[in-house]
Image 1: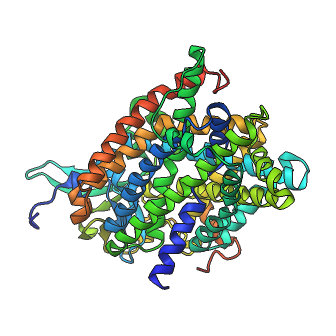
Image 2: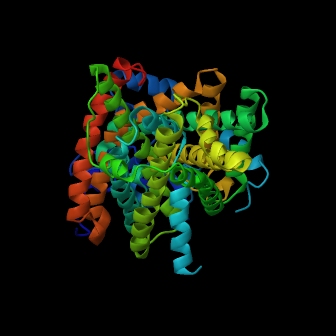
Length: 117
Length: 412
């Protein structure tokens, strides 16, 4: 595959996103494409609101009820390298994609031994 | 570590981790009901799990990408999510069955309240997975599960009829008086196949390979471990069938509870036979409970792109660690509802076979995908055997629920 050709469905959609330190940030749940003039990728989208849209109608409702309607937008210019993963230029927390926050993190990080290998 | 020692330990671990509660219950009862006749199903199931175990290990070693990455990329979000839910429900039921089985064993060993013992089991499992490394868990439970070899010694001691045993390894349908007996035979055949080829095994094996840091250089090692380890593990299943046929059948006992199986070695070797059998079962069931809880967490984390793995510092993979804890707690809650643990075992096996095609198809597709596997994609042998077993498990999956209902769970 040449560097001028990128299959955004096979090589970008549903691929893992990692930050500058190779920390996992979720997956590419949807892709925003601008259709003015030459079609081009504007941003990568992450969040349950978008994946819910990809489910059949009844499941969509349940999915949003349980897991909410989060949406995070990452401008395409933030993508630094595309291999098996989509690597971003900055750290996870700068995009609001760091899983080291919220009640699950608060719970796990307080357990004895949580900071040791 | 010395390469040979590593392979040797790997084989023993695979062997000791082969049997879990469903396999134990169905193997012993298959022996009681049908003597040597269903041995061929153990042989068939073992070849099946070797084919898919080898494939999933190779996928982990060649791509170092977990299977649920692949499933979501190729199947898309909706179909991938369905596979995830099915796989995790199967793992949850199996985990619950193991916890129930352990509580019964502890009751036999020490007496006491079943629910309290199930609760203690839950705490024990949570502590073990939290504090021990992946490698330690793998070794400890695999190797100590080998105490179940006392069933192999017992099977020899009872003096099996070798020629009848040999015939049992050839696919056969014995002649019965009533048609319902044929259905019960079919039910046990399907359940034995399912208990050997449980879906979590391949997922766990693939993620475990990544935990162990496998590279393409590990492919040959993986092949040795899977082929020899699982074949020796099947020896345990065969031994359990023989214990059923030679000890329980003449006494007209159909051991429903997992602990009852220990009576056979206890009869031969007294107190120590009993203790070895019960401890062996304890470690085998606990190992399977842990593998199922971890499998659930691996699957979810890989599907949603979270940080995962026991090799990570827990605070850096909080959701993954939370997920296996939730798996354990939900599994224990199933047991706390007071449902008969034997029924949980039965449903876990039947549900597993129903979703087996959904489990093995992605594995087959990943294994043959050259983009994903490079030069390590399935060869002709893995391809032919893989598809042949896929057809077989599809037939078994279609037959499983009707057989469960018609035969009243094998009771005729």
